[in-house]
Length: 138
Image (cartoon, rainbow, N blue to C red; front, side, top):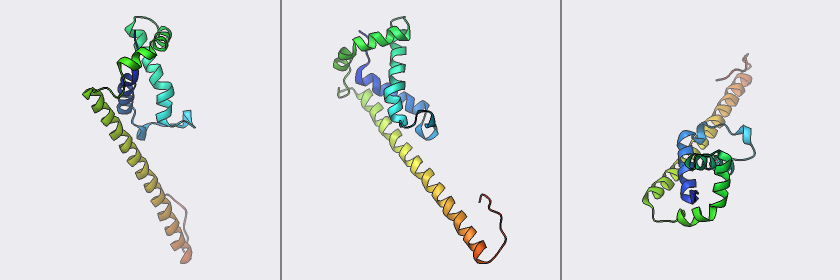
């Protein structure tokens, strides 16, 4: 049997978060899905089936069939709520990565909003005093 269960999902997700931080990963190619949903439903299953295919010395397609057939086994043997301290560390890493991404996104949004306010205020000052101005990035 070759299924990584929920623990495998967590390990793969943590690795993806470290390799491809959400703050630096464009998401336009899979909109309307968020990066998190795209990873959960597309990338993580693809990585798992590829790894399982390598484990059984076969193709990713055979890895997928093995993963599908052994899913119940993987869920029982590798549950998320197992007392596995290594998985707990990975879950904590995932939580921190998600919090960092949220903070980075909010910072980018605030910076962009402040830039727009600054440009608007400068333009209003120029117009209020009748000064000639060319709209340019400030």
